[in-house]
Image 1 (cartoon, rainbow, N blue to C red):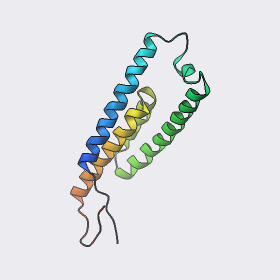
Image 2 (image 1 turned 120 degrees about the horizontal axis):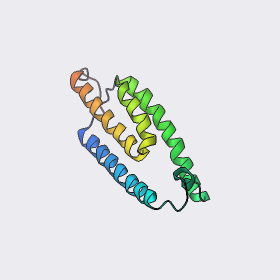
Image 3 (image 1 turned 90 degrees about the vertical axis):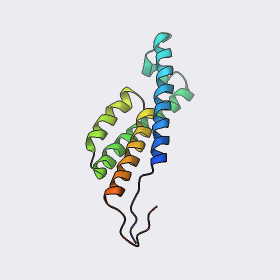
Image 4 (image 1 turned 60 degrees about the horizontal axis):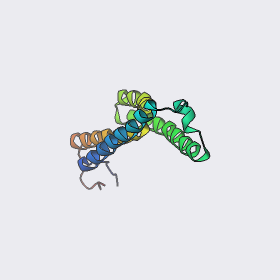
Length: 126
């Protein structure tokens, strides 16, 4: 029995809301840092103590994995140009913005695909 992935519009809206929250939250703090860097460079500030270093490594590794996912999944969905926009945005803006943005765009792509290619009769759809 085959399953056809279907996009969920309310879920896409939730992902877009997370993307906006990620954009607003990270850039509010980035602008505060830029206004008063306390003699530290931006990346240097990530590693001022073990707790911030742990969080920085967590985000960097997750960002790299997300970028691979952006490229691979975008190819599956047939919209690679989005992946090549999301990869640099991840490092220029924030992973907290691009990852939920990617998930929202993916939901919309799955929704368009399911409308274009409805599930065959007898197939289960999740």
